[in-house]
Amino acid sequence: MVSHLFYYQLALLALIWLFVMLHLGWPRRSAARPPAPDTPIKPKRKRSTEPKTFEGLIHKPSCVLCEQETGETNLPPPVRPAPMPLTNRRPRTVDTSMHFCPHSNCDYRGWLGQNNLRANGHPSGGPWRQLHCTSCDGYFPEHHGTIFHGKQAAVELIVRVLACLAEGLGIRATARVFEVDANTVLHWLVEAAEQLTAFSAYFLCALHVKQLQLDELYAVLRDLKAGEINEDEAIQRLERSPYWVWTAMDPNSKLLLVIDVGTRTLAMAQRVVHQVVQRLAPGCVPLCLTDGLKDYGTAFLTHFGQWMQPARRRDKGPMPQPRWVPLPELLYAQVVKSYRRRRIVGVKYRVVFGAMERVQQVLSACGRKIKTAFVERLNLDIRQRVAAVGRRVNTLCQGADGLRQQLGVYQVYYNFCLPHSSLRQPLPVPEATNGSGSAKVWRPCTPAMAAGLTDHVWTLKEVLMFRVPPWPQPQTV
Picture: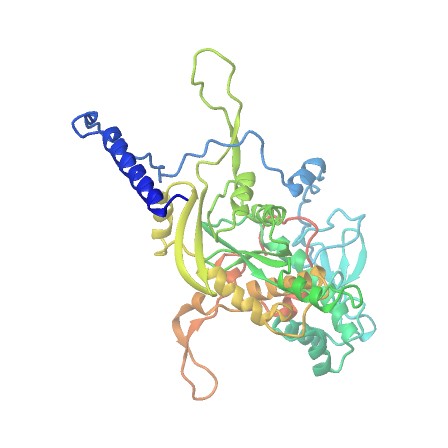
């Protein structure tokens, strides 16, 4: 039997042989290859932080409203007739310059201040005066075409109900205050919204604006029917409610140009900017300031762009395709805010179209910086005065149409009836007030007055009594 010592000796010899072979085969320093000569290390390529020049688009972005206007043929308004000469009869004491003849067979239909109307008393002792057109020999009441036409309720009741709605009271709460049926209040709201929407379209046109601020306001709609989905799905759908209130205002005059309801998509951005362009005068391209929503850039490029033929880079070859580029006078900047735990942790300013120097030059004339503070303050006022947009309220609308009606009433009330404290004007001579109070030194001013659309603060009754002409007039009322 072989002893264990033999195996130990054999293992020891194997280790010694292994060490000898490693020593002989290991490369020596003297035999190592000489180090390569030092070569300069190329620095890593860094991306340029300078903004690239926008080269334009091959195709113009599509806008549904622009395509509809292209397909439709709008008939021009009829030729304005000459004013009727004054007669030798007793001078007219009732002012009829704010009225027009509604009859379709009349040559003076839809024209204000043509001396073709005269007052004809109150038929049957009623509250409304009758007007007579001397051109077509037709008669019509002075409240024709307004919300008061055909209503048995008192005028003051309708005005106060709509004033409560414009101040932020809900429909059911307003009905309880005035002891009116809620459906009646809703019916008055629908009719008033239609009339006031036409009122805004009539006055807010051909505006010359230097700046615009646009923003979106989150809104929750109660458009879910019971039994269709469970509670968990309803909560999830409310958390990602797709409806937003879009606003566009002039920060100088505080005029609210556009207010609409829709989803936060490119199609809605195109619709809002299209409405803004309709409000502006031809050739007016204001400085636009928004948040970081990318869809605004496409919408502004669609409506404030033009075709441009790029220059050829080579002498031979086909001509480059024309590009859709923004107008040279278009200036658009964004305020991009970073949030963490519902708090702002950073703000960046980005100029999308134009140069930063030109943007600063326009803003320096007003002593301001790139910001959207004015439209954000307007969003707070909307939440306070529109019951359907308030936070944690039970006055939500059933759909977008109901919210759009309340916003239409608010737009006119804000622009024409509600004086803005920052727009007040000092009086040349203080006016004494009733009692022992201090003298009045400020003149109230509304956004419409600051924009030059009117010369006085309108009452809600005066707004509701205004009959909107079917086409633009040569002079602003």
